[in-house]
Length: 180
Image 1: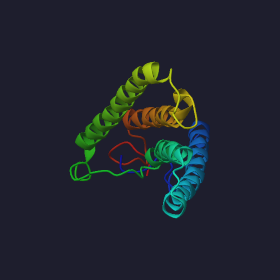
Image 2: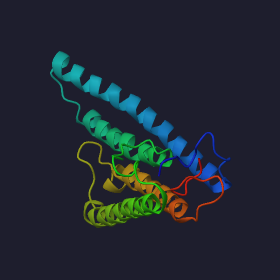
Image 3: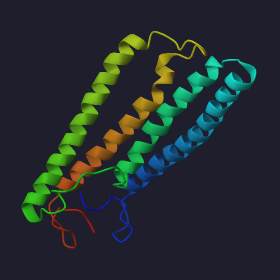
């Protein structure tokens, strides 16, 4: 897709897209807080090891938890705003029907990835969910919750993008069926 679902020059988003955007932005804010906490914990861990020769396993574990949150809670908004890394050497040059077909195939591949990732996460958590983290004794179901929540929201955004790519070209839309 050449434009975002929240294109500033396009029509105002519908109620569902507005709610989805708000949810994605909320998780982005949470990811920013997790980034700040993770940064503090890493600095604390380095200081504890170098100044007091003491390891803080709980700080390391919380920093890893923060890292999961930073990545997986931010990716739905990136996809919603088309802000993720994209290699568009071919797609930027294809116009008309071929460009639209490529956009649809691309969105199907993203959605397939989501399905495979969520299925793999389910299989993993069926085994690892019975255990807890070593330092904090946090159940793995809680530890990996940012991954699952982030990927579920990512999947909803992917479904929305696919539905927009499939939708027939409307008046005022570009050749790939996205509103400009």
